[in-house]
Picture (cartoon, rainbow, N blue to C red):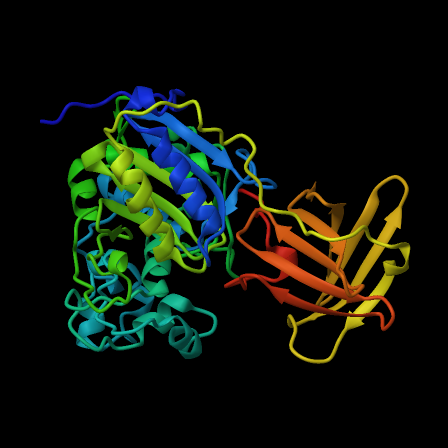
Length: 463
């Protein structure tokens, strides 16, 4: 029988060298993240032996701020399934349709009826492709019903396809088995024991957490989930996840050799990807929970990265060789990290006023932008999209943080006023070019949100 390992709910701070990591490797990783095209870091927390070796946030992001996880949310949903299984609330080998008796007469395809919770956990429902849009087309008001009425192409358990309704259905199974929301179920069983005080979840039109996306939490909380799995389900001497669950969740359940990138074709577990080193949960635009059991290391990162393979390449190139390598710490300083603000000249008062959208492509529904100035607050920008308004303070040569926004602006050489608005609870950054003579603007996303309008891109209210 394994020994229960005691770890506190707040990570002790140490230094890289004291934990057997050469700080030069961490510095190299940071330089690589900052200089690689398609990569923009927002935060990192590096743990070894349950202690903080290094952490840093690129301003305007900060340690206490939650960050949209996108598909890294799936790993938290999977933990809920593991806990519910441990409590005897559900059987992983039960068929999916057995949890939805109201659909029993409608779901007649043999493969759909044979699909189990384990198949959903492993993204091996038998469908060859993502089913989200097709399931919504079948039943716009009931995603589970739409999903179960789409016959799988192959026998469940035989093929891999990254498939959002698999995770949404798992979340609904937990809600039904527990009689509460996903957050309500996880709070006393996972979040409170791990000391995760901040976790929100975007909900659908029925008030249900998306499960497959929409989770918001801090970088330290991401690291805590990784540390729990590294400790094989035990936290502070208390078992939260069964050891067998951790074994199953973090090893290949289904092969995925056709994935394009090397760290995405190492196999898939239970809402975790296997990697060339260790395993990980991840989400769009660079949200990572990387666990390296052979090194007793967890690395949590957030960002706005379109090339996620490049992020992992940087970790393998710089951090991995630094583990168990002698070095000193004196040149590592992560306290002054920053995302560069907009560069240019000061904003002229002629830029004040309301601008309408110029002809050509733009952001749907974003039709009006107001740039205003007063002596007390300085510059502010207001974005009007589909009847909702988002107002942000604007810094000149700096980031002005205001609630869930951070904005910076400057005057370009051609006289345009360039404004960048970061929705700092998310990966996303919006660029505006304002032309004062014509009172028009153009707008583009640095990375386009996968769901939600501008006014919804913030930490959602908790239960």
